[in-house]
Length: 204
Image (cartoon, rainbow, N blue to C red; front, side, top):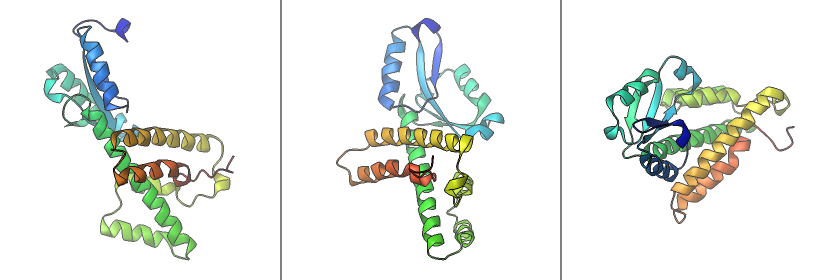
């Protein structure tokens, strides 16, 4: 990275990594005369195409106006998470909530279906009570797909999503105090991702 930048430049890290990695990178870049900030993105590909990503940033108060202007070209909202490194912590928190909702939706769907209920009635109840956000409603399109239909490029795409989810939840485990009883919940959530996305062990 050092060879690709020069003093006075600014680096924005969009990757979801550990906050400690960001603070280390910031201190390293500072020795080169370079500013570095975490600016994680949320919203997905569709939001990126129309410049409506949400930017979860650390150190916004230290950013120059040109840097903020650059963020506003592809994001419709810049959220100041706090000091440098807190943007990644915020993104990990957002992702943890997202995966928890996916897991809950998957569990509830199977629970209703295997007991003779109508999954569409469950969807109706979720919408009426305000429990179904945009991301979770989009995810519900995966629910109930027969394992035999999860093949080829579709399966590869889901495997990639599970890999990313697993990485994000490992980061969440690192951020949680190991003595906190909720730490085990995040571990269980991480271990459930394969099942949540319908990728059974025998689904080759």
